Image 1 (cartoon, rainbow, N blue to C red):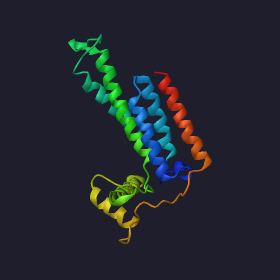
Image 2 (cartoon, helix red, strand yellow):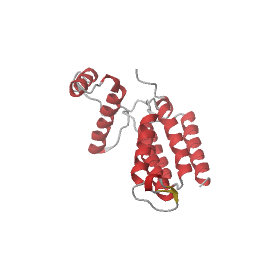
Image 3 (cartoon, rainbow, N blue to C red):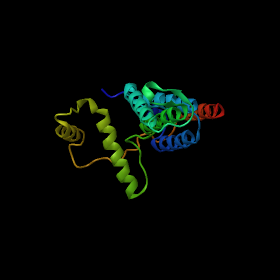
Image 4 (cartoon, rainbow, N blue to C red):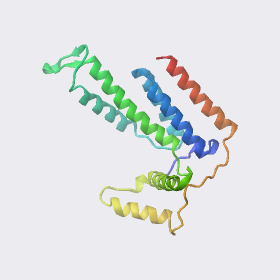
Length: 198
């Protein structure tokens, strides 16, 4: 059962997309492990508000794996040497930062891109349709199994689009509400506070 997308009710899809891009730019410019981690927590909460199911264990394993592989190129102060293998501060922090950054990029895309997004031009329509397909499949991902992967996807698409008339990203919400503006400004305020924490 798909979760309710609370963001879509208060923020127009186009504004939501630009909002995500601006937050993404600020995220990439922020330096330091702890500030980036704080931003990732914010993005994860926003993705949950957008109705996305997040398996935090997956992102913890992803970040840990990237950090582990980064330790293979040691640099900086040696923190510990189990079995002659040097665990260095520089490599550990760099690896954790890379893993957290990738998780943040995923969370931003989850909350800022919706199937209702309508972009101008032929490429924009194609991209909007792709977002529509992706969002629909993501909402029904529990119906997809490994052994019947392709047939499950085919069945979901046939259920969702019984005719050839596939919407090119319906702009259902014509305006961003005052609450939506407040939420956007609040997110930028939190981002600014995190940036000053650097």
